[in-house]
Image 1 (cartoon, rainbow, N blue to C red):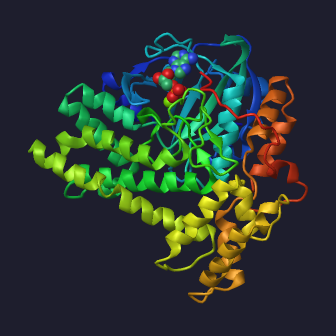
Image 2 (image 1 turned 90 degrees about the vertical axis):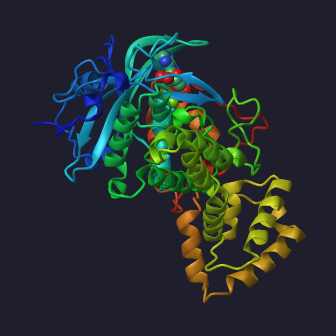
Image 3 (image 1 turned 30 degrees about the horizontal axis):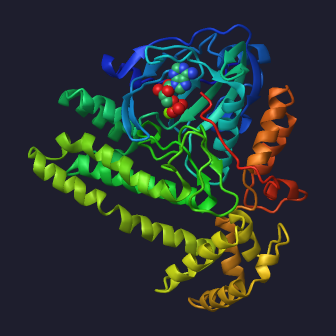
Length: 482
Ligand code: AMP
Ligand code: MG
């Protein structure tokens, strides 16, 4: 029986500056921790007849599948606003796999050892953060949000030294591609127009072939990537997701959520929520995510300047015009998303006030973001005296009045609300709990949580403990996990 790999590698054929040819560094004693059967199926890969030892050898990079050709990709990026040369310092792309429908996916090992881009790092990753990426990326996918996926995690049988000694692990990440804003920044910084054109044409062919023949491909690429990023960040805002490290190297041209480091879901509604221990200034706080998206897109636009027009001033003018349309586009999409969360059809000029008044009230009363929308769908996750509050009752009257317009019916609005308001999200304390158990070799709680998060929009039996926020008063903090 074969697994069904169908590699067709194109990125590795790009010129030398784009990559370093390198194999994963073999590990001592690989052991499969988790394999994503659902995703395997979607990729037309079949591991059912392969024994665990072979699967472990495969996903540790100790034995590469036929047709793969592993490389570390070069990229740069603005990290917390500072430009740095980066690249895959602890990852290798082993190739591009084609599904039966001819969809192309990057297969990448994260934690696979040192490369030319490792700087002072050890090239390795720890089990906790890799399982965290697996769990949250799969949760995001099931929430209907574009994201890289996770195919497998193996333990390496080697220790990694961080503040403490941890189990080493490798995650297999699946992505539409790993072309980042930072990839463009890396090539643009080399100031060789032919190289920039190669990357530009490659990215268009791979992700946006519909603009291949457009009049001004560079402007259309900027516009399209902006649309994709706005859709993405609006989705994040919808479910209370905080990426935590929105550096330009962590923004994918394909519009997928990428790089799950210090990310977490907001519980108590507070627009200034930050979980990442290193984000002291709140640069990547919940409410700042659209602002940073625009900032990152401006860096992307700068890379495209030589390709927009021969006249540099004209190029800048045209690109600026697109970038400046960000706010209007974002607000439109954000308002529509919030209308959906409240079951509102059509547009009413007072919608924005209705929405903002609810959010302000939630903030004042320190209410749980997810569970307040559940309450509005008549789903009582937790009893909360605040729901009896007079201001809230008054707000509800306005909401009910608004619900009546545009031939809306209770059935219609509840269905709409149910399609966008999750009833369960990866609660921070639950995530920590299952990762702690996994670190002690008990993978069952992780599997259970994954199963519940498979259907985040349906009210499942006996899942209350997964829906209520933590009682702990301690501020939740995440770490980059490098
Ligand atoms: P990340 O925080 O995962 O987005 O990584 C930022 C940059 O640091 C990327 O270039 C990574 O490859 C690199 N990096 C992170 N952790 C390590 C590590 N343990 N060893 C080498 N490079 C690393
Ligand atoms: Mg990264």
